[in-house]
Image (cartoon, rainbow, N blue to C red):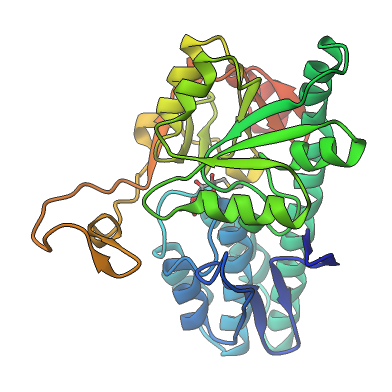
Length: 346
Ligand code: MRU
């Protein structure tokens, strides 16, 4: 990922601390936040200083490493981190790796082991996302070639599943960046994604790479699909079941319905760290309910009375039948056929 032309990752480490790009300050300013305790790691995840399923997992891994520096109990540390946000399965996935890798090590080796694992989780995430880009770019190339290489390829995305949501590259946006690098003219319709406006993060990171894009209201996607102005949708996921039901940012389901009605292919970019192999139905996924003030206020200014009842689920589930294919680091498959790409999970 590039910020002002300089290559960076969303998360970095030093000897005694971890540094993340503070996403609550974007798109207005690029601010980095360093922290050195487990409590801080929990706070940056809970307060969405970092967000996006893969980056939540990577940050949690570093949270465990910081807890080892503080000489804390690994089980207590993992429980605290796991309680920060309930939906993204990457959090549990990363914590399981850290716990399994560290629990039988004692003394000074424990910290070294935890740090090495956290570094590996971050590096693996960057590689995985790069592979998703590699596998997904063919979808955009096919649209471009089918049209005799005339006209831009229009992609619609929801929320932010770009490099800000991962260690590097992103999931849904990785194929877009690849296409852009290949010289395929690509344009992205960016859903605003109320109430937290992650679409503005997507617009910001696309701008950093010079990828043409247009921010639209959450309700506009169906309209552009009806007019033939969306070639394909690509979204990320916080948790996908083994059967291909996809949990992602609230509003994803409505986009999938509109795509289905307009014969627009609907793709989900899912690293295997976002697949919950224990679940066979999206209805079993815990959906985070966030503070009602996210709706009642915009930038701290009330737009309804403070006692107005609001519902604020952060995610919804798109059933597998509305998903054209899932793009993983091992290639593409029909949503119900994830096990064919990951037979070891059978
Ligand atoms: O609440 P957020 O901002 O953490 O939600 C993020 C999303 O829903 C993303 O689409 C998802 O994590 C995929 S990120 C590669």
